[in-house]
Length: 364
Image (cartoon, rainbow, N blue to C red; front, side):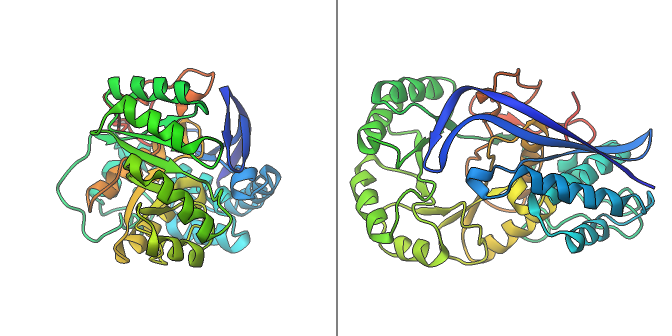
C-alpha cells in the first residue's frame, strides 16, 4: 500500500515581479512524497498559481487528498500510467496530477539507479515502473542518439525601467545567455526593449512575454508592429484564445508563441511554451509536445516560478525533447528569483542548466 505525504512550502521572491496578470511576491508550492515502503519512494511537486492559471491552492490540496485515498489501495507493482489514469478519473486537475507523476518518475529513477532523462531517452524494458509499464513517448517518435547534457535557457529581465532592464540584460549577456525574456504590456515596452537590444547586441535573442495583456488581435498587432524594429525572437501569448492567437499570427511581423491558452494541438502559433504543472507532469508535457510538433510548431519548456523539483522535472523533459527534435531556449532559469539558495546543479552556467545526472529527478 502507498502513503502520500503532503507539505506546503512558501518561497519568498527577492523582489516582486510585475506581470500583466498581477504582482508576485511569494510562491506557495506543495511538495509530496509517495512511498510504498521506507526504501521505495519518490518526491513530486504541485505548482498552481491562481492569478496565472486560475487554479487555487486549496483545490490542489483537495485533489491530492483524494489521490492519497485512492493510492493507499495500490501496491508497488502498479503501472505508472494506470495510476495516473485512476487519479485523473478521480479528479482531473493537472496541477495536482503533476505532483503524482513527478513522484512516480522520481521513484522510477531511484529504483533503476538512473536519471529520469535517461529513462525518457532510452526506455528500458522491465518492471522499474511496474509490471507492463512503458515510459511516455518523448514527443516525436523514436528517440535519437543525441544527448543533451545541459539545457539552453533564457534569462528573465524583470526591471520595468529602461536603465534597469538594460543593466540586467547586459549582465545576462556577459554571463553567457543567448536569449533573454522581457515582460511586455506593463509600461514603456518599446523603450525598454530598445534599451535591452542596445545592451545585448544583435547576437542575443530577445523574447517578449505579454501574458495576454492585449485585449484584441487588433490591439496586439498594433503593439507588435511597434516592437518589430527591435528584432524579437517571438512574443508569448499576445492575446488569449486559439482564434485570437491564430488571427494575430496571420498578420504579425513577429513569430507568436502560445502559453496560457494551452491548446498545443491547435496549430494556432509558431511555437508552444510547455509547463510541467499545466500539462499534468512530465508524461503530459511530452504528450503535449508531440501534439504541438505534429502541427509544425516548435516547442520549449518553461516554469511559472516552480520549485527545485519542478525545475528538475522540466530539465529532464527538455532533454528528452531535444533528443527527438529542435528545442528553443527554455524558461527554466527562475530559481535565483527566490530568496532561498539555488540547489547545487540547478544554477545556469554559460546560459544553460545541466540536466541532473543522479538517480531520480534531483539528487542533492
